[in-house]
Length: 248
Image (cartoon, rainbow, N blue to C red; front, side):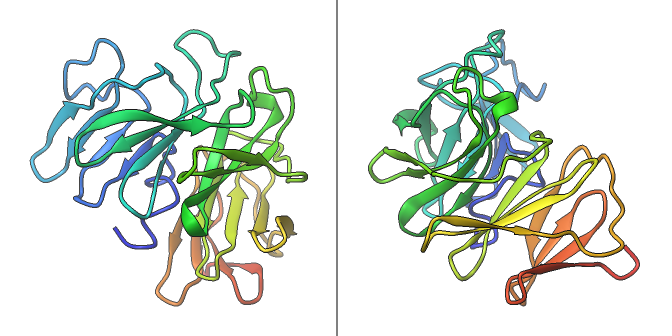
């Protein structure tokens, strides 16, 4: 688990997290690999092909995202009780990868659904939300959760992505965060924690719009990021621009 493993979802799946020991924490529904009547999170071991249940969550939920901290623990954000789509939760939970247990880690500023996460310095996490999937919160945007204190700060302004279901986030080496989403149109932004602002990033000329069901960001050795969506792209943090992948 290096820097490229921390701060965003496994292979574009927000309900999964790759642990430092190689196991995968699955929180987006039973896998069928182990008896799981209550839909509790599961641990999959690719080395053995075996699965096991984690301890129960403090708040039963579905449709949430998992965020692995640089220290190895995993945070669960957002989601809603089974069968109650319009009743998002503000409770944040922490999974201890050593004990396999969940504990309450703090609260968001409101009951909202979280679409993507990106780790900032000092154990803080940037969270992207959207009005179309916010439950009772009533507004989209972003906030910063502090994993050391359990508190959260709502940002004054943030991009409102028009298609919230396909959002990815990645931590850049300079401390900023790249946020991108795919679909009928492409939208992306870079968050700068120094002044708490977002800068929108235009799609590259010649990009073909699509309807990708998911998108993933992977860091390349030179610090640029490969974006795998409807059209493969490369983001250069130095220039602040995307470019098409040759032959993509």
